[in-house]
Each structure stands twice: as structure tokens, then as C-alpha cells.
Image 1 (cartoon, rainbow, N blue to C red):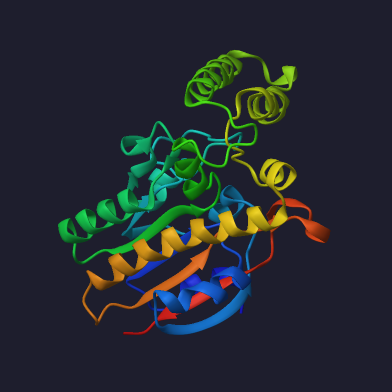
Image 2 (cartoon, rainbow, N blue to C red):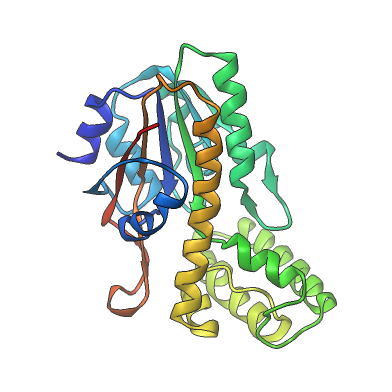
Length: 279
């Protein structure tokens, strides 16, 4: 059965979406946090936008979408180079956690903030279904960002001051490229040139899989991805524990992620979890 059909035809009160969560890593780690029945399915598409458009083809006016990912938003805007989605027209409400709880230092929506918002809206509308979209295990990898903020593990042993200056420069130019025409290849500037300059000369923490693999090795990348997933699973457990045992809970992912080797790097249409929580 395909992912869309499962989401449409399975009875659930809470659907958790873990962004770019691979089946193999979920299988390895979920037992430390949750009980349930696990199957593997192939994601509908290779990215969040494609997943959303492929799965949510009908109106979900009895459902609240709590989004930690800017791609799914109530504002009808595009994010990260994706075209605008009509998420605000599909659901009873789209809760833009990415907007009001974005962590400016780490440049990410933290999983605990997504859980908090989900519980608030669940209490506010107890009769509604709810979809909770965590941005993790998608990069950036929170554990290594926090670790490097303490001055540990940087590539060149740079000082906090250098990192601070490098971050300010990186963010300034990244923001400036928002005003350049698409034909100027802003993606190359944002995602390659500035990032690599920041890593090489200012000791900035690698935030993307390929950068991390090249500077610290494939094992470090896999560990960072797994730790990011565990942060999300810890918050999913907190969310589950706060709900009644009668509620049906499903966990899945919008797409997978290639983590080096023969797979290469980047978002992929691949095996992701389909997990029915048991309590």
C-alpha cells in the first residue's frame, strides 16, 4: 500500500511527520522511546513540497497541521527555494511554529517547541485531528551545533569570536542574496561558496550532510543524523505521553535522506517508517 493511501485510509487522531527520516535509522532507535508496530514504506516524493502536494490532495478541514518546517505554512509562501503551497486552504488551521518559535542562533525549529505548540492546539481543539511535523532529523544537526558553540570540535580550533564574526558575515551575505535575481544562481552563493568559506576560514560548524562528511567524515555525519532523530523521538514520546491512550497515533516521514557512500547526498524518495504507536 502506498503512503498516500495509508494516510487517507488509516484511522488516526495524531499523525507525526519526521522530516527526512530514513527507515533504517528509525528502526535502530525507536525502541528506546516508543512501543508499536513498524513497517517500511516508500515515500511519495523526494522532498517536503512534493510529499505535501502528492498526499494532501483533498481538504482536511477537521485537521490541524502543526508545522516546524517553513515549506508547510499558512502564509502561501515558498521556502528554501520551493514554490508556494496552499496549505492554509487545506486544513482547519496551520500552526506556523517555524515562524513564531524559530531559534535564531541555531537557525532551526527546535523539536520541543513543536511539541509545546501541538499540545496547546490539541487542548484548544480536542475534537480535531492533528498532524505534527517535526523538522528533525533534517539538518542542521542540533547536537553538533550546540557542542561547537561550547568551543568543542571545530575544524580549525577557532575561537568563539571567529565563529561569531563568521556567522554574522555568512548571515549578512545570505540575506543579501535574497534580493538578487534567480538568474544570478543565488543557490550556489548561499549553499556552496559562503558556506564553505565560513567552514574553512571561520571555523563555522558544518550544517549540511556533504559538508559534514567532507570535514569530519561519514561516521560523524551518520552519528549527527542519528542524534538529531533521537532528539525528535524524545519529543514525540513526550507528546504521546501527554495524550489519552484511546488516541490512535501514526508516525511517518515526508521523504528520506542519502547520507554518503554509494547513495550520494541529498533528499531521496526511499524507505521511510510507517509506525503505529502502542501503549
